[in-house]
Length: 364
View 1 (cartoon, rainbow, N blue to C red):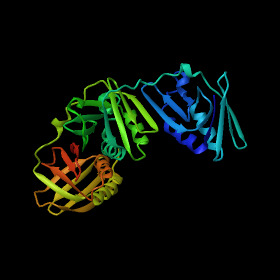
View 2: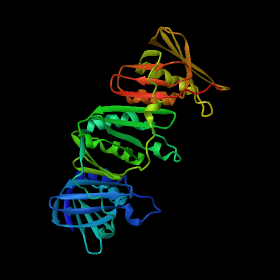
View 3: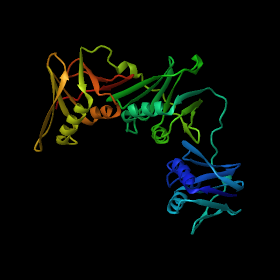
View 4: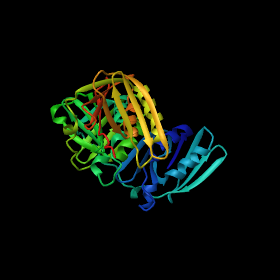
């Protein structure tokens, strides 16, 4: 195999795939990138057996072929050379000679025939959505997914294709984030899938451009086609909990507040929280919200935010980080906090089809 490629294109492709490699205790070839040179393109693929990612770059192929090379070492080598043309030649012993300017590297690879193959793509129905739309949807919910390994299903994000909408949901049992976007697809395209957190993270990294993304679901696999980059992932086979039953549908009080003012007040007050008592009290009164945090033997913080509210006094306690997360993820100037009292869940809403349910903390 022999090809030439512009360094910036090579680096861009390697950046797209280098995050998906298996741990050191796995098969050695899973530390490698599969490189295929054919026609006028270079295809680079990595996998950890749960997730696979393929990036396609333009190049000049002088002799087509395939091999696998250590992806991190290859990336580090190419990142050190000057911008310009990089030539790569691989012999029958899987030894790759890389030349760029005055630099020359020799890397020892492994046969491409031993590299796990990507899932076969078929003519299954695909959903098409703007990359920017999916990127924003994931930004609004992904942080709420569980980090607890014992709650495996909740570590993923639900993607629900129903009622001509795509709904994304993430929850860790203490909070829940949901966002919706209209999406056209036939009735037989309705389904619920759970995307693993690792795939969510990689998808968020990959959704950097504009244009459309094609999503294809096939049994236990999902494929995302971003044009020059393709991401494949296994799906979680557990059934996602009925999230709608935890969303309060009737709340007595609807309180409007400036998002940035509230976020700043929570951030300042959270300085006086500690791991054992990571809580902040919100006191809603007519026309104002008092935000306080106190830790025994450390100190107390207090701040005040104007609000649109004329009801009875409500005191409620939250983990401040959990309340700041959705405020960072949405862009509206004004948000609405819906409450019944200081003991029931609060619902944060904004102008887009988004909501965030947060359970209050109990006073110790």
